[in-house]
Length: 199
Image 1 (spheres, rainbow, N blue to C red):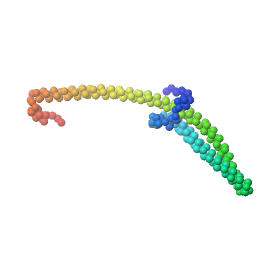
Image 2 (tube, rainbow, N blue to C red):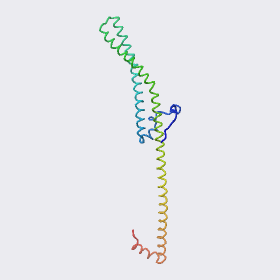
Image 3 (tube, rainbow, N blue to C red):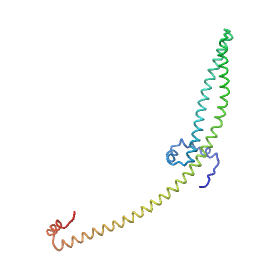
Image 4 (cartoon, helix red, strand yellow):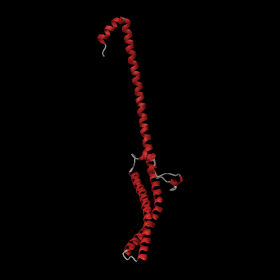
């Protein structure tokens, strides 16, 4: 099958949603996936999961950062006002944690800025694969539909022939009955029916 080429911004321009969240896509392609489609779906799911996990981690780190900063202020006050030497190790721990958080947050923000573009690219790839699959399914279904139509025509012809045959047999039965009835009358015919008619 030919390659599908359309501009990558078609997803944005046509407001195409994430395909794997779209009810029609799920209904049409859950049971009919090519290997390429399954691979593209897996990649898209990984990117979406990473985005969700990064957002949750960033939110948690921002909360934790506020707590650690408050802790540092509290320990600092304790060291300065109460000359608490034991609190110095706690201060070191808190400052180390704050440094780790401050290193991690920009990395998460950078990830969260690039992931939507990757998701868009992967969704566009899945759209192209889906379109290829859809046309293969359309062609297969049309072919199967034509075969069904041929079979329907054959059955109709056979049915027409059977109806004609039945009509001919029924007419013969009626004519034979009429002949016997005309020759012998109804009373004699009833006796003959009992003896000769097969159930």
